[in-house]
Length: 601
Image 1 (cartoon, one colour):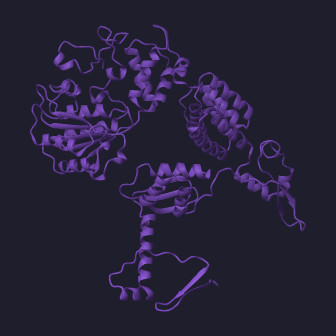
Image 2 (tube, one colour):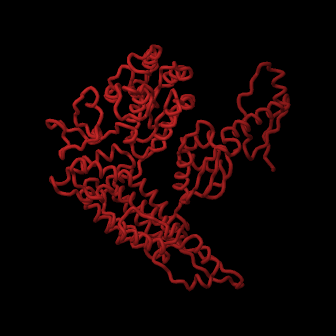
């Protein structure tokens, strides 16, 4: 898959070959080519992590059921542009002995080199980010009327298609509805929700997935070997995790990592960790254990030490979130749990899972999630991270809600229970509750402290309906999410901690995730929010408000004053129906006196 020149420049100068590169990877005369370009897939078989897409395309091409428009979506660096060019090659594949569309692109066809180099006259590429207007779209589509010059199909590749204006989308739509037989469209976007449904419905959609960290690490290992570079397995895993599923980002980081050691010397995980600004994973686990056990002093000291060593506080909290997830998995799966880490660290995670309650882990997750966001936005990230750890340590010493309820119900046991540092009221400001028997001896009473404190620092009370959730979002000033909830969610069920809705056509694909995260932040509880397209939901909040407004309007028009006004003022329109102010009763008859009397209720 290298770019080493081959004897036939017309065919192979731009199609990466499988021959290994030299150790320097520089090709000719020091003209170095970065790994992300050098190892760009030249066939569908070279792609990693996109098996479902390749399988669907293979069946489509073999059966002749080839769509006239394709929509490729995914995060940056997963291969959308590369896939678009491979598709263009497949649609126009032609060589001696084969003159039909095929996704088997080895050996390269007569049009392959020119298409991969973006210089084929029948494959037109356009960046919608810089060509958003309707006039540019019309100019592009004018060429669709003419037959291809050299190849079988005229292919239009439009990158970042979501950047097109509404007028440009409308101009494109007509051609998409009735495309000429020789025209194919390939769209790519990172923001699929911004593409009109009318366009999406006319395309065969492929969601290019993030590549699994394990598969990505194996891929990087093979490339490092071809480059003659020595890099440890731990270092490759760090790079794969940091890339977050993006092959291009991973190759760019590998390029940088290879330069972290002298020639012939292995690049260690420590070198890559320093390069990425990451903390030592074992030390982060030490930090997690200290916070989970309520040892705030050790947690703060360890965080400071990692910060002085170059670790980013936000990255450290992100690692702590990962550990909270892994410990929860270990608790639920037991012996079936597997971990992508050293055996000693996996053993420590299993020990933690057996020593921390599920309720405590859920609380740790929510607090870390909120703290991670605060740390990213704070003017002093270290201070924000330290405050998060302090809150974690305090919360670790508090009883769970179940334990607190048991204490309140079992007066004697609670009175004899030893006071923990977090509940003694002696240093952290946490509120406490003492139990004493009532004079009748029948039931315990709660004796509040002189300065009562809330039992939970979780924030707003939990909503009990979709309307409550919308009101809570309005209070938090998250108006975009409130608007999406009101317009796109048909209520199916609403229970404490669990919401199910039927999404309306055009609903954002991430509505459930956004709502779950925001409600968790606002209430301090875990919310499972699901979108069930097959459910029969009720009215959206917007539809309900419109219906009630219309009913109020019709009711108002049916009153005697309104009918009398209509008779005296033909053509008059009811503009607004306002609710009567509480505390006042307005008695008015048309033609009589209007008096404000006290509301006796």
